[in-house]
Image 1 (cartoon, one colour):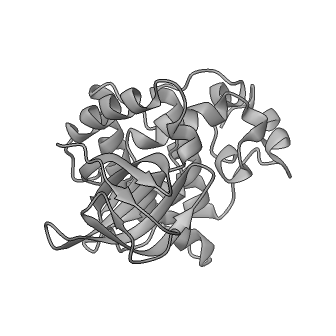
Image 2 (cartoon, one colour):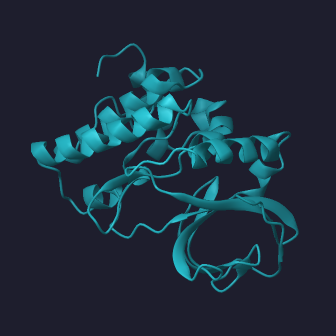
Image 3 (cartoon, rainbow, N blue to C red):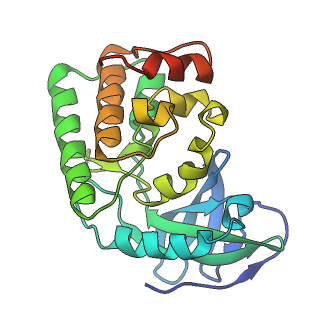
Length: 243
């Protein structure tokens, strides 16, 4: 896998060419850490999902080295329930350095999309989705990787109906600085936080399992336990409580 260096000028609008290869289309979503674009890989002539990390995160000491190491490890984990990482690299975004990933384009919607439409999984559907995600997490954990941000938005379906975990490696890398101060974490993420995350401690394999259990609970019942009306209240409810 190669790292690309390129310059792209102008404002972040559809049509921008990233790293001399990825023609960005509509912005699919954005947060404090990542912007997500539909894109076309002009070299391979295929649609991809491109995620661009915020330049403030990229400017942190040692981030670029950690990014390269993490992406190399993530790319080595090949599993039918993990979104395929196709490429990654470094680019210039309006004069600032950013890193990006290009992954398979999954068009079946996320578990979050399903829940937000008022739908729930049946027990048998929840079992199948849960087993597939458990298999994916097992492969990642055996490779020494923790996802660190398992939640319905990161459980995405392909056209084949199979669920994939997205952002393996990248999710943990970009969310780690955020969890240094748990009170600054958006409530959309705090809702799926493990007790150790709520305490500001390092996440591990059990954090992923806990977050998956919460995701499945919401997907099957439409409700989540231990949720307060703010990030602080939600994290406080998450400590010393049984799921």
